[in-house]
Length: 216
Image (cartoon, rainbow, N blue to C red; front, side, top):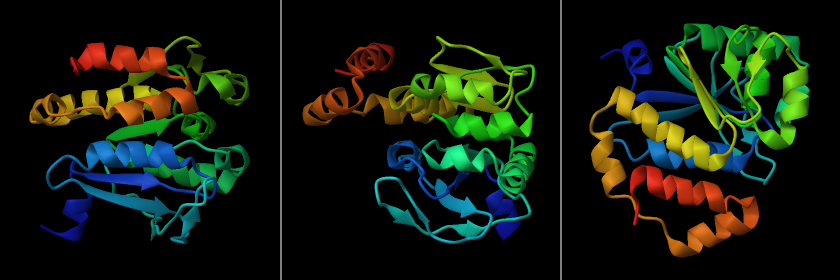
């Protein structure tokens, strides 16, 4: 298998990073996708420079100009605020998204997609705390204020961490039947749930998550 063929595999997921990305938007999906056997996860950017999250986590990235990944993920974070005004960066994102078979955005990552015009005429959602700002970027997107997540052709958009994890498991079901084995063995750590409740006030979503996947 050539490098190009490997990059185009559905088992290869490229996560776009930028300065001031939200750590949890990246690491949550990494943990979920990383549970798949032989799943290659790479971090990419236009420059290939290390990118630092808002929480101080620095990750190295691969420099990518010519699109070569069929599955990409765009996290949210404060960095999307300035990048949404950067035409050159938006064109880079658009080029990557147009090539990809599946595009996933987390939280305000949808702001970058909205600026590409690729969402025009489609239903989409975003983080409700940033809803007013994101939706102001493109009035041709059919923004849905109450939706947790949306699947639009090859685009998947979700508004909060728990919905992100749920959506990724649904994505597994599309790509690999073996995901059911992964989900059936998942168990939430009680302390972890309490921390998520405290930090993100997502107790209702967590209960819904347990019901959907029958997690004891």
